[in-house]
Amino acid sequence: MPDSASAPGQEYARRLESARTAIASLDARHRMLGNTRLAIALVAVAIGWFAIGQRAISPWWLVPPVATFIVLAVVHESVVRRKARAARVAAFYEQGLARIEDRWMGRGEGGERFEDPAHPYASDLDLFGHGGLFELLSVARTRIGENCLARWLLEAAVPSEVRERQESVADLRERLDMREEIAVLGGNSGVSLHPERLIQWAESPLVLNPGLLRVAAFILPILLSVFTIAYLAAGWRLPLLVSIVAEGSFVMWLQPRATRVLGEVEQAAVELEVLAELLARLEQERFHSARLIRLAAVLELQGRSPSKQIARLRRIKEVVESRDSLAVRPLRPFTLWGTQAAFAAERWRRDSGRLVRPWLDAVGEIEALNSLAGYAFEHPAHPFPELADEPQGVFEGTALSHPLLAESRSVANDVTLNREMRLMLVSGSNMSGKSTLLRTVGINAVLAMAGAPVSAKRLRLSPLKLGVSIRVTDSLQAGASRFYAEITRLRQILDLTGSPPAVLFLLDELLHGTNSHDRRIGAEAIVRGLVERGAMGLVTTHDLALAAIVETLGGSARNVHFEDQIENGRMTFNYRLQPGMVTKSNAIELMRSVGLPL
Image 1 (cartoon, helix red, strand yellow):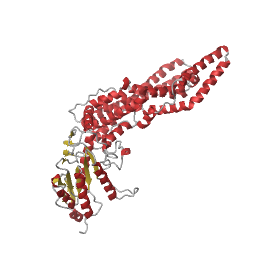
Image 2 (cartoon, rainbow, N blue to C red):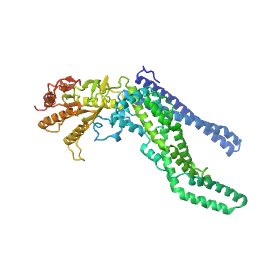
Image 3 (tube, rainbow, N blue to C red):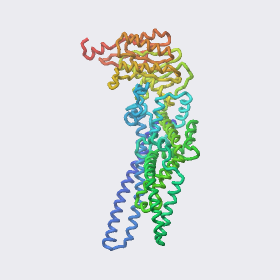
Image 4 (tube, rainbow, N blue to C red):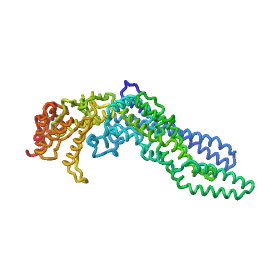
């Protein structure tokens, strides 16, 4: 494990250099072994020409070069595998350094399949897609791990659950060796394993039930073998014909079901390949957090090692695949090779099929926790949030910044919402940082309720439901205008206030798709309605008339703003949140600076 005092980037760079050194060394051995094998092959050809073509020397002279070639081939294959693994290790640390150095966008899995335009905050907060939070976090090797992580980002957990995840993330944070070894499992393949398909296969009713069928499949090939020997030794023709007809009829009657079983087990074994390696690696770990200990216990359900159980299924698959080999074909009538493999596969489903679902659930959760642990390791300055028991809701963040922005460009701000302060109305010009502030608050709330560290100096919050209206667009297919899409989202957010916990709303440029008169009346009614129903949040606007809403809410709301400056015809921003309402507008001056006739 890395020294906890060393910077994550330094540790990644050290391990990356070690992997690259190993690649260079193995590449040199790869070339040397390749050239040596070629030379030995040429020597063997020359000896063969003298021994067989010219009969000048004994053919036994071929044994040393052939034996040497075989040994070198085995060694060469090992070198190729080790080089490929070192390349995957290097890729793992290159990706880690890219995240630390803010070069990660577009290099990972974006989780686009989880996007849902109807979700109350996913699209607005950039959870999925190119450069989204999921891409920054996920190091999952299975779809079940990705599914679990996505679900945690989309659904806020209760405080007890969040605390358990925090404890588990802290347990996994320094286990860099484990993350490295998991990352290189399964060769160069990306995320694999389709959980729904596997569970359906594992839990569906048996196609071949044991009992008389199993007994017949055992006895019939034995009788055929005995009567074949009797025919060859004593000419017993009739018993042999009867046994051939009996076995042939049995095979033809059973073949459709056996073929279905064999096809399904081959697919299942392929799907479980990465899972088996992942489980074997997890079985080596000794966890400390209560949640991880429980998950590890699930993996040892009934004392059965899942990796060994899946290895058994892999061996059955290998038997299935060998049934068409030249060595096995002559034996098939005397063994019912494929039928026996089908019964073995069904026996595996009977014994272990019901364990597949808990295995997958446990692995998915560990993978999600491991993704959060990787983020925690790479951001050692990011703390876990404090969870408050405040039924009315609280969100108190100190030096909040946006985790998807480069630290060199990110400006931190404080945000306080609690029992007394229910609304912050943020004014300022376009591009001044208003929308980014909303996303900063929202995405840190998502991280907090998923069990991850947050991008802040400190964050204290209660359980919250998020309702966000930032990136609401029109829909040509649905025939909905942007204004209609926005008020539909606002209705959705209002509906969230019907039950605890408290709602945290983040509304950008509220009702800016309508005229100023209707916007002023509608915005005040909406904000007042949300606050009166126990919600709290932030609303942004560059319409100074809307800033007067604060006066109607008394001491439970306040104005804050972002400032801009015109310097040499260019608008500049410091992105620092200031108290009070914005007092100036540079729009006309800016329009003049670009040559508009004003």
